[in-house]
Each structure stands twice: as C-alpha cells, then as structure tokens.
Image (cartoon, rainbow, N blue to C red; front, side):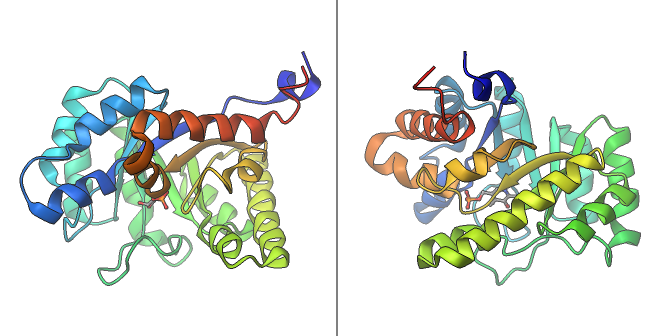
Length: 259
Ligand code: PXP
C-alpha cells in the first residue's frame, strides 16, 4: 500500500438535495422527490444528506426536512440561517448536524461565509443551545485564519470552508487566482485543524475541480449539491454520486492506481 493511501484520512461526501426540490417546485406537486434523491444518493455511497431550508422556502420545504429525518438513517445535515424560527425547528427535528449559514433573500445561493466575529452575540447562544440538544454544529465561513480563531472562540466544533471563490476562479480560467484561492482554503484548513476544529468544505465543487480540494488533508467532509443534481439529469443521480466519489478519491490518494 502506498504512503499516500496509508496516511489519507477518510473524506466524507454529503449530498445536497436542495435542487431536486427546485425542479419539483418549478411545477408544484410532488416530483422529483428530494427524499427519493436522498435514498438514491445513499445507495450510491453518499455519507450524508444535506438540505437547506431557506427563509423564502424556494426549494426545500418544512415537510421535506421532517420526511428526510424520518426516512433516512444516514446523517442529515440541516443548513439554516441563525434565526429563532430555524433554530426552534432544528431543536424539534434533531438532525445529526446543523450548518449555520448567512442568508440574504436576494442572493441566488449562499454567497459567502458568516460574519463570525460581528455575529458573536447572536451566534454563541445558538451554538451552545444546538450543542446541548446533541446536534453537531458547523459554521459556513470564509477560509481565513482570523475567522478560524473566531469560530473556535465561539465554541463551534466544525467549520465548513466556503469554496465559492475557488470555484469561480476555476470557471474563469484564471490560473493564478485558482492557486491563490486554493492556498487560502488550504491555509485556513491547516490553521483551523491546529485549533481543534473539524474542517469541512463546500460550494461550487464539481467533478472537475474537486480533486485538489479533496487533497487537503485536514478536510474530512465535502458538501456538494448543484453539480451532482446537474449531472444527474444526464447520467442519473447514482452515477453522478459514484463519479464524484471517484474524483474525490483520486484527489485524496493520487497514487492509488499505482499501489
Ligand atoms: N455547503 C453549504 C453550506 C451550502 O450552503 C451549499 C449550497 O446550498 C453547499 C454546500 C452546496 O453547494 P453547491 O450546490 O454549489 O454544491
């Protein structure tokens, strides 16, 4: 067995099913069903299911969260804004994990990380309350060393590094910016892990750009949605998940073929 395989920590894949609900909601009704998508993703090797209940309910709805919690045994990661309404729902549903994200109605997707330092007074009691309920809390944050320290000071056990800027640089084909953004993610991951934080990452990750992120050894979970649901239109969700896992594996253990 190669040294790369021996030393690489497992990397979990959380499949975000939000955009299955986006397609369903385009016509109303019941299909495609995000719960069915969750089952298919799990059968294909997803380690967890992620769903984001937005304030405007533009994709996932309250009843989707309840059904996901009832129907799947695999860890459910419930993404919410730090509002009283959402926190009460999380306490009631008790998912395995909650990821706190910033939310602005006008944004197309979650466009950046939480203001961890500025939001301290609001976030600290929410993190404590969710933790007391037995829910693992993560914070979606910008990949910056100071933010890692602020997250640690708030008592969050996990951070999810926002990889949107890296993904945009890849899309723009700007190699220097890609290198800089990737270095930013890697440095934040190393710093966060040295403080004792568990490190996740997500946003804009695709089969093509995921490899170098998967190679960052401190990252133990990736949450991926849009690229998987997009690929599913052409190859089905099971094959899309399997291809993403294979791309993650190639990035994590680059010598695996030679081993
Ligand atoms: N992680 C978080 C915290 C998110 O808000 C999202 C988008 O809902 C994702 C991961 C998945 O991002 P994408 O859909 O771009 O893969």
